[in-house]
Amino acid sequence: MKINIVQDKKLAIAVSLVLLTNACADQKQQAQAWPYFDAYRASSKKLCEFGGEGVNLSPSGKHAVFYQDIASKTTVVGVGRRLSILNLDCAFKTGAEETCMTGAEAYKSVRALAWDKNERGLYLVENGQMLSRMVFDAQTGQGRIGQRIPIDKQVATTSVVWGAIPSDTAETAAAYLAAGKAATMHTAVPGDMLMGLFMDSHGPIGALVENFHGLDLAVLTSNARTPTAFKGVELPQGKLTRPLGSAGLPWLSDVGIAPDMPAGALPPFAKPLIASNNGRLLGYFDKARLYINSTAKGAKSLEAAVAEALGKHPGFYIHDLATSDGSDYGLILKKVNAGKVIVLSRSGRRFLQSCPANNTAGEPTDFSLAQLSLGADDWPLHGLMAKASGTKGLVVFFRGGPRGTIANLDSNSIREYMDAGWNVLAVNYSGNLGTGSGVSSRLRTQGMVEAMRKDAEYTASFIRKLNPAGQLVIHGESLGGPLAKLTSDALEVPHRLVLIAPLLRLQPPEHWVGKSGTPFSPRPNLTYQKNFEAAMLGVSDQNRAASQLALDGLYKVKSDSRLSFAAYAREDLVSQPAHGQFVADQVLMLRGGHDFVTAHPELWSAVFAWLGSPPRPVPAVP
Image (cartoon, rainbow, N blue to C red; front, side):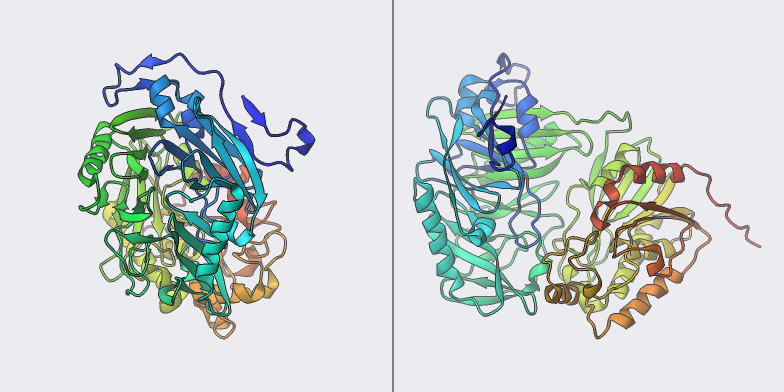
């Protein structure tokens, strides 16, 4: 049952937050078939539906918060449109998690910000401008909105709090956040733009700022401004935390370094594990294992629990992990194209929920996931590969960019290929942070085309060693288009090349920024876009012509070993067939703008029909 704050449907858009509850709990069942935990198990419907993509715990471990985590364009703080809160004590007591869960859904965005001092209420940021306090009934554990007040938009969109705020009203919580901003931003210099404000129950930890002029990333604390080795645009999401036992500068936990350290390297696809009760950096986890500080409370038991969960669910990988003190934890395991498993632990009692995939296509779903190194020690290059038996072949996938990484094979294009029965190798190419030291700056420091060429050579070499069975497809989107073309040029074996709205021309930002049909720029500002291109691509007004010549040169190369397909959108000002030197064997023109080409229903029917057509005969060797 969906309970709106207002009943008038005409007002539903204006009032964005709704509470989601379910009064129809399934009959509780003893967990005799589930020796993995010692509580009751109820229907999977609501927990699976509202379980979200990420999990966090309240400071005491009493509540599990499930949320969406979508990268923002202008901050390092993720956003989502809905979240759900499960009272674990209630779930263990009643055995019916659906009656112990409350959800929040927003018209634009909603995220959990902080708990109050007694954990009776949860502060939410609604639509980037409102602070709401959700209070929970002591008997049922159900939540309702108690207060809602407007707050500073910068604070609303950038604040992250670990632990509890010493407050029990929305007004005092807003004052606490405003004081934290003031305590850190006084060390800012002209041009600094707030990207993340990080606090705990004792006050501010620090702030991340990007300077408008050079886009350099810096850390602000109450008494200093410390530059980092990164550009702000290299960090699509990030957190400032303090490692265990550290009293110095806070760390950029998503990078694994303090701001005054040289750029380091984490394991590929590693995510930070941060204690929800105090914001301390406990370690990291990737798809396959947990790397936790041995001095952390409950470290061994948490390592054992994660290993046990993976052992009981072969083929699954760690999607997200949260803990308060090592004994209480929330774990989401996923299997490519085959659903997820949610494991929750509270005071030694464990709760497990299996959630099947919604696959109705009848194609292979038993995909395995592998983290792969395609490069070398001096040129890190990593990828994720989803592989199943009985597929049609392999798709090598280069997403648009350069900001962000492929972490979960959840893009629309990748899902389309897997649902149609293809293996996928997704490559995180130069310009993407989180896959090795210096990777995010390579397009700028090495030259865009030359860095891509080296990425392509390593990728092609990996494909040769892999020697995949079936058809081979090289797929590139937007900025991934040049990389796909370069990889295709480096291959001698027959294959297909698919380019979706490829980057063909390095147009001056004046020609497209802020106009209909163009990509979502981080900030619709010409000066910022020029700084962005210089920081990420190494392209400026001074070298734009030379960079364009290099781009034209790579598209002119022809090959008898491939057939090519290209799709464009008529309203796209960034990518059109007339923009460059690439001539495809088949061209599809669609309606729409740059960012929505891959969501067009006609695209995929055309792509798969073309992939099913006969290949070009390979010329005989004299």
